[in-house]
Length: 116
Image (cartoon, rainbow, N blue to C red; front, side, top):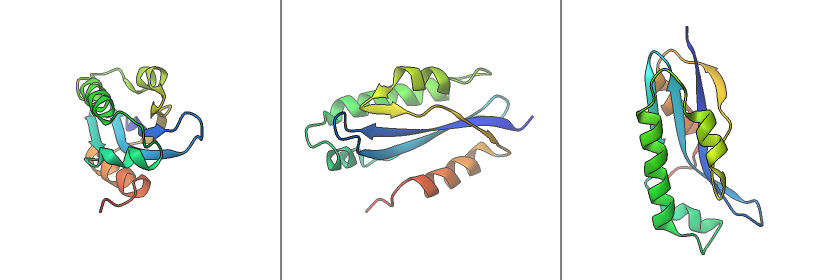
């Protein structure tokens, strides 16, 4: 079966609702999981000049560990429930996935602004 899931990781300003995407998570039960996050975490400052960048980096590492360590059960739904304020993981979107790496790169290219 080629059905998998993906979610977007973003930082959202609590009061203004402005957001900046930070990465993409892809999960497939048989073909594995992939994560691609921006290295430019300072992008968060565009929407929240007071953001704690070290905290954001720490939470991005936790998200990566949860996805990479996932087996046959998708972690994306539980991550979406856990990360709902400031650092957000979107609800998983179902997708036909032949190649998780290709899907990840395509989504990342479409959803992320180019890094300078």
